[in-house]
Amino acid sequence: MKRRTFISALCGCVAAGCGWKRASAALDEATLRAETTTAKDGATQVAEWKRFEFSEKKMGVPARIVMYAPDAATANAAATAVWKRFDELNAALSDYDSESEIVRVCRESAQNGAPVAISDDLRRTLEESRRFCVLTGGAFDATVSPVVKLWRRSRYFNERPPEKILDAAKKTVGLDGWKLTDAGVETAPGVRFDVGGIAKGFALDEALETLKTFGIKSALVDAGGDLRLGDAPPGKDGWTIGIAGLVKDGEPAFYRTLANVGIASSGDANRYLELDGVRYSHIIDPRTGEPLTRRCVATVVAADATAADALASAVCVLGLDETPKLLERLKNVDAKEAGVPGRFETLETILYRVKNDAEPPFTAEKIDVFATPGFADVAKTR
Ligand code: AMP
Ligand code: MG
Image (cartoon, rainbow, N blue to C red; front, side, top):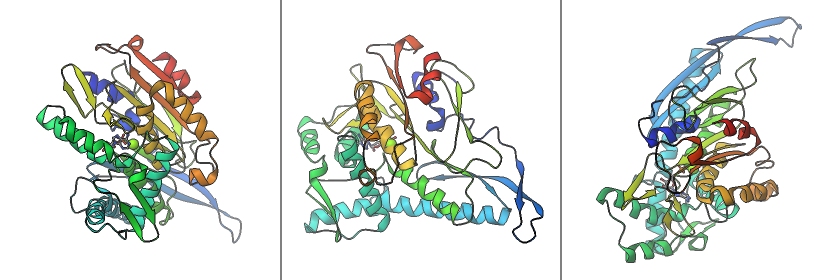
């Protein structure tokens, strides 16, 4: 990793989540011999499970699958199925595509004032979006779309959105403007969804499920640096994920060995607007409708990638003061609220935030860090 600018440095600090130079799975052997016992006669067979890796550009980001499979034919078929699944999800959930299901549904609901039938993928994504909006006290909110769009336009024209238009957009943000029923989704006028803060995680979880249908459980799937890990590589404790430091150039600052989790990062590293010395992030605080102006990057490890993705966006919004409260709250939610039993039992977070007025280079003293125990030791030393 080069630290030419703050952007690359900050991105690099969570290399596992930013698609920067990573060491993901770098320490795995190319081929591993796994011993299996045949049920018939109890004799020991030696089965060879090989490591396969595939890359494609999907959902607008570089995507990668690393898997252990018995043979190339199985691996190829499984990878093809994952790419197809990503394409399906992109067609349903992308807000960059005016013909995607999610964009069309909002348009039709506004026109008809009636519920619009939706696919199972969109329903599940919206259910999860609603769940994480409630769980994060509105820090994650998929209805932030109209505000996001205005700021995207601002990045292009290099000016703040006109206040009147911005105020109108802010009024459409929130849980009250839409509902899901058996008939579909119903939206109030002006409500638009942007599931960009959760959909990659959702797609990664779906990718792992797809691989399982081919008998592949030991796998890592990467979408733009957000990861979903399945079982550890055969004979290993986990996948070795490299997480680079904020202040040091070069190799990742530390490694975590993890399995069966989702890992996602959010931050204002790449997309922002600088106006009159204020740096506006692409992440919006839905509670105010304003972009974050403090530079931050958060990485979340959760039981699944959907949760990690939504929570990483929320943690950036909540910052150092409110994030510990969120984590405390999540520990106590019941299975129904969580959507999946035990979903937040192993939640981990690291959040870097640059102190007020601090200028590059961003040495350790210029950065505040909040870290849960799994990250705390490394956070102290970087
Ligand atoms: P992520 O990289 O997962 O944090 O997703 C960022 C994207 O999610 C942004 O580009 C917006 O499209 C959208 N977004 C921005 N702020 C929020 C928010 N507070 N809650 C949900 N989605 C958001
Ligand atoms: Mg996210």
